[in-house]
Every structure is written in C-alpha cells, then in structure tokens.
Length: 275
Image (cartoon, rainbow, N blue to C red; front, side):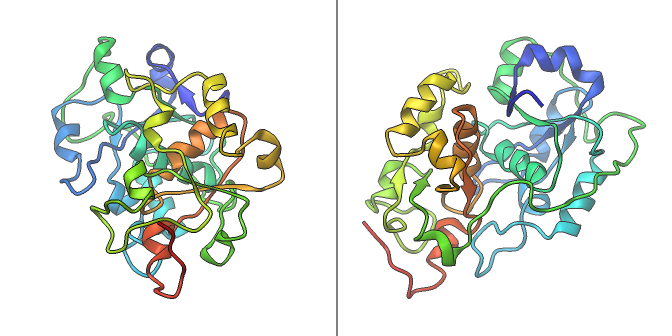
C-alpha cells in the first residue's frame, strides 16, 4: 500500500486487478443502491453503509462498529479477499468511503485506498461507466478474514484522557450553536475542531500533505503526538471522523478513532458537555 488514496488515472490503469466498492450514501437519505444501478465504476459492487458498515443504533451511538463476523460476511459477499487490493469510493466527499477504508484497515486488510475525488472525479475524467444492480459478472465470493485491531481505537472511558481529541464536525455543531442530528448540542470537553471540509480542495480531492500537516499541527496533531498515541478523532456517529483520520495519515499523523463519537458520548447523560 502506497497511501490511503488512489487517483482516477491510477484506478483506470489497475481496474482489472482490484476489488472496487461503491459506498454511495446520503445522511438521512435513501441508500445509494439506485444511484449504483444507474451507473458505477465497471466491476464495482455496492456496499450499504447502514447495513454493511455499522451495527444497529443503540447506546454505542448511531453507527456502532459492525460485529466482526457480520463485517467479514458483508465483505466476502462483495468479493473482498485479503490478497487483492481494494478501492472504495462514494459521492459524499469520501465520508462513507472513508468509513469502509477504516473498517477494512481496522479488520486487517493491508491494501485498501479511497478514490480521491470519488464518483464526481471519475465522471469528470471520462471514466467508463457500467449500469445494473450487480458488479462484475461471474465474480467469486471473497475470502477476506476479518481480524480486528489493525487501527487504534479509544472508547468513551478514555476519551477525556486523549491529549489531542479532534472533532471532525462542522464548526457550528462543534460549538453547539446548532445540532440538526443529535438531541444534545456541543462537544466533548477539551476537543479541538478540524471540520472534514477543511481537508479538501474545491474539486473534492484531498489537499496536499504539507497543507494538511500545517492544519493539524495548528491544533496539536503532529507526527510526534501520533507516535505517542496522543491523537484521536470523533464526529457525530463515528463515520465521518475517518475522513480526518485519512487526512492525518496523509500528514504523517497516526490517529485513533472514537467509534461511538458524539452520539455515543451523549447516550450517557452524566458525561460532561462543552459549548
């Protein structure tokens, strides 16, 4: 693996040699299966974020991590094997694709990357498009073996001890000025805010590594802090925080994920809230 991203040109050149997962999704909207059927990267298989990349909502938040066995079965169903590279993409600024990337990495896949710029970049570049409800004809079920622990995590009891806790939500949600999704507004005390939108250029691709390094260093998320295990990220439900984790990886910073994120944090009314 050469990094968390792959360009459209690189994917086009290696399309026959990778498993491609389409993770199109809209928060609060219908699943992206309809968009997938209308057109997708040739050979791709559709992955439903709610069904395949999360467990049922509960005390652990709106998108708890899926059970290992459930995730393994979902990935095998769409043709993922441990020995074959995986590329994931979406039409949501890499937020849903980032979740798939993180889960595969967490469960031990060694070669998984996000299509930089996603579906929009593929279309802009004139990439070939395939229609239909299934992926590559005749594709075999994968043999991926999910082994948790490949990426660091922090749970609720340890969140307040993280020296650099990055909140990936929009600034107005972090500050508690508005909360359109969860019943309580605000953020985890001591958290710093780097909205996922700040990771991207205007065309939806990730900013250069040096720019991202400066952005995260400004809030204390440096390579040295990451090496000491002092950096973690969270968001509303544990999905979009993976976007910041990708950006930090590009910047050379290793960061843990708080899977429950804000929706899990506020499930316990005794936990403190800062605004």
